[in-house]
Image (cartoon, rainbow, N blue to C red; front, side):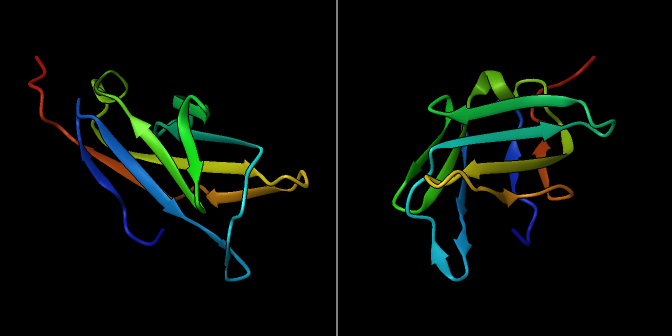
Length: 108
């Protein structure tokens, strides 16, 4: 990804990743994990295949729920790694890639 995706805080949203290996879209994956990290490197959100991370027709989708993003504001590093049916791990997003959440809820 070359641009930083931006979403609103406390909103349902979907991150869509079209990844190609040697110019060819992924045909299948057997596992996947997406993680988001705060500025100290601590994991603030994890999604796995079947639990917020889906794959269909070469496209990886990460579903964020309102509950996932309720307390997220600012810019976070994120990464996503998948495993192909042959067992090879492939980073489809790799840190230092960033994602941003705009504040929509007042904080006191």
